[in-house]
Length: 454
Image 1 (cartoon, rainbow, N blue to C red):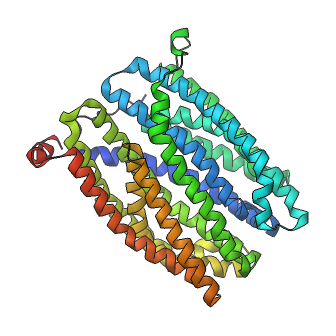
Image 2: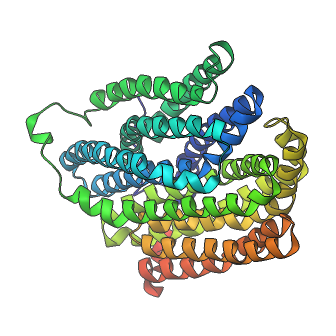
Image 3: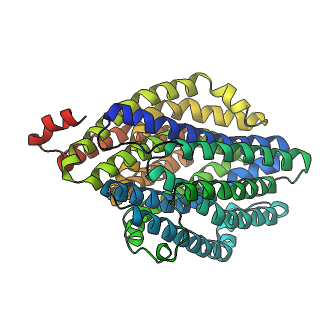
């Protein structure tokens, strides 16, 4: 069984690599599942590929729900672990399970009430509208179980058992891909194959993860651990709500992106959807890096002011690693864009649109990766409001300028160039946030001490 890492004494570069690599692996595996599902739908039929692309905004809403809850749980556990409060950790996990299920049920109800109104903006062909509505309802139903599973795995990450959490995610991915493939090509359930695959894999992994949590005594069936832990609400408010708001900003912006591309036809929408998922695949590791850095930073924040210099050093070293990582990723996406897109979709018009997107936008992932890493860290060290404001400004700029230029010139590439230039300007944000973190967690007097602790 993996031992919890010592985040208070280990060398920071070593800790970053040790925590980040399994988290990047877990995030990539999760994205491979999503991309595989897209590829399956693209090979099942054009209608499935089209509807799966339209689902993107709703997918971000589910991500907003799951990420807000699981990261709040992870941050709170990391802080409590740094403070040495193991009893409170058990209370916290149970409280977040209750919060997660309750909030998921409320979101499901809201979706049932308002989804028809939102979907009307897409003007989906009549013969596809009911199928799409049914699919959305079922996916939000499955999100209740997904949130439960995410709370369990984030608990393991919070105490430092990152490798175990990653192994569980990989197991989930293998079951999910196998189940979706079987439902798509053997049972031939079409778009609903994704729902059935998600449900089967999630339920299996909930049982397996519960066994590990009980074995590690993080879940104890004792009455005293089932009372509500009030500090959970504090972390949900300070960490979870800003994270969810950031994803809701993405959720809303995705609607506008689809509306901007809509005049160019269903093939362009499908191509944009595939390219956007490839972009998400390439950028999710930056969130994983930020999350890993957040775990290290929160352990040191929880341990007291004498460990604060390690907080800034973690950010600085992590930024360098992120830059080098995305130098490689951006290069791969630019030079192999056609081969990657061709694996995802068959329609030639859609392939051309996706390749165009990646040719223009992929080079700027070098800067967007750093921005997303920084945003993720801010969300986990009680600076989520700054992250939300930056996200809002970022997407308002792209939508406003990109929509105007695209309408004026009648070409989708103007939206893509707007994205690229905006991503490049994000480096200013990264530098500014580095200065703020340095000012808060390390003074001139503590610089030498920081070097020794590292």
